[in-house]
Image 1: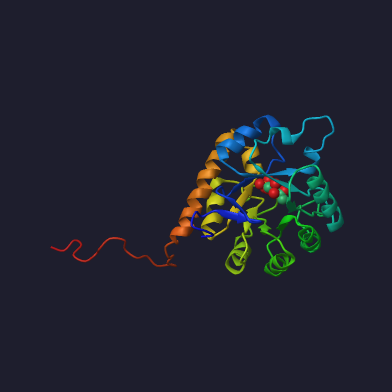
Image 2: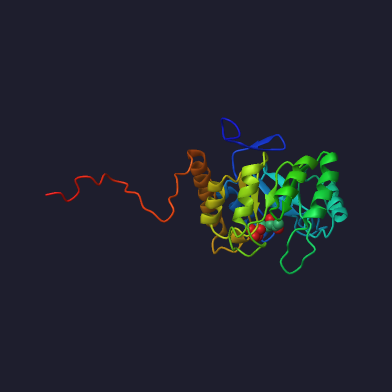
Length: 258
Ligand SMILES: CC(=O)[C@@H](O)[C@H](O)COP(=O)(O)O
């Protein structure tokens, strides 16, 4: 537990919701409803959707009081990510930034090395930096040393809805890092978000699974419940798992005795 209220603390700021929502795939008209039903307090946004010069601006659709987490999507190296982060701050999106550096166009894998470089620069400039990475414990440790406020390992490729394919490596980060671990990308169902929280993740970030649901607002509500349930289970301490043997839950002595 991070404090007596079980708040999620990122960059010194407390949050009661552990469900972050991505907005990259939303029609803007649905956004407020989805945020409200998911009771989310942090939403990501791509700079290009906040800076469309006369066209619809995503910032007009985000309810007041929500913390913006601009991402550096489109960046192919650290230099581009730093430039996008600075622009986002100038546009009034705040100090939070999610570093996303992707040059692999097939799997959209994050470039961990360039992400680390961008984190080093932006943390020194006072940004609250949340780097999106492939879950690698050495890189996660370096990111912490570089000033990251949280680490965001991928569950599976972005938009795949394939779930926690990198589960064992995420668990290493959760077990070894003294920093919020926010599972991002690939979470396709509320049950997968629940599992990430049961594992001890500090939060999850979901976009595609909500945006592509038949009823995105109802799906956001389902994710909220799943995240809360997983968190409660984690705090309660999961019961032991027995391998290849069973153990009776009820007393067996005297059973069927004449
Ligand atoms: C890195 C990235 O872009 C993800 O944060 C994305 O916004 C969420 O991933 P899913 O769309 O797979 O939920």
